[in-house]
Amino acid sequence: MNKIAVFADVQNIYYTTRQAYGKQFNYRKLWQQIELQGEIVSAFAYAIDRGDNQQKKFQEVLKHIGFEVKLKPYIQRSDGTAKGDWDVGITIDIMEMAVQVDTIILLSGDGDFAILFDKVKHTYGVKTESYGVPQLTAKALIDASSIFHPIDKQLLL
Image (cartoon, rainbow, N blue to C red; front, side):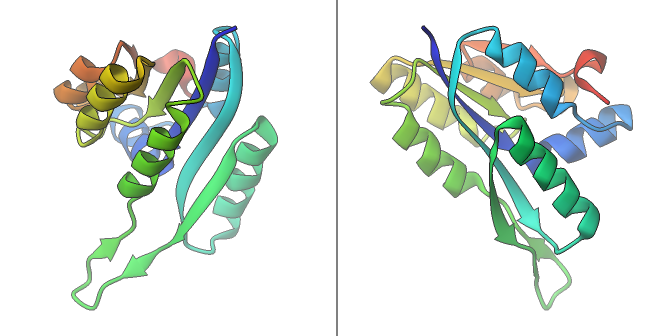
C-alpha cells in the first residue's frame, strides 16, 4: 500500500485561498481525497499561534481530522513587520519522513520548496505532490512536483 505523509503550510493555504476565492480551504475533503490514494502514515499542519479562540477551534478541527498541529508563536517586530513562517520546520520534517513513505504531499504555493522536492525525489525516490492555488503557486514548485493538484472550488468550504 502507498504510504503517504502530508504537510500543510496552513498560513500559505489560508491566505492564497482567501485571496483567490474569498473562501476557506476544506481540510476534511482533502483528507478524504488523499485517503483514496493509500495509507496516511503522518500528517502535519504548521500554523502560527496568535492565541485567538477561533484559531484554536480550527486547530482542534485539524487534530480531529488527523493532523498533528505544530505551532509557532506570532512575532511582531519593533518595525511593525511580523515573522512566522515554518519553511525550515517543514523542510526538516519532510527530509525525515522521506525515508519512511512512498509519497510526500505538500499544501503550499511557496516556491522555496521546489529545491526540497527535487532533492527528496532524486535522493529517496519518493513521489512528490503539491496542492496550491494555481495562479498563486510558484512555477518552480509546480515543476518540481510529480503531480500538482490545483486547489479549486471542490476543495473549498
